[in-house]
Image (cartoon, rainbow, N blue to C red):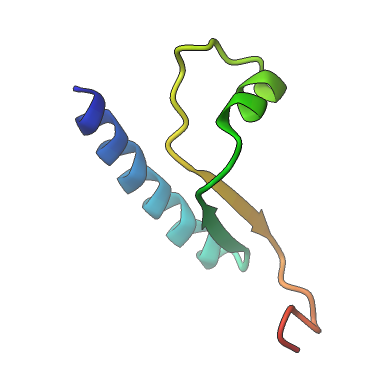
Length: 66
């Protein structure tokens, strides 16, 4: 059930990212984050699992590569 929950959360995240594009926001899924720190910041229980973190925002004119 844990694996199914993670897969379902990933599919929901994909839908969220596509929806954000429709309203002119950019998104970036991130891995390699400090899950213990994130749980503390969000006041989540120790047993909670974080599927991914998604950065969202409006792209700047110069951008990273501009």
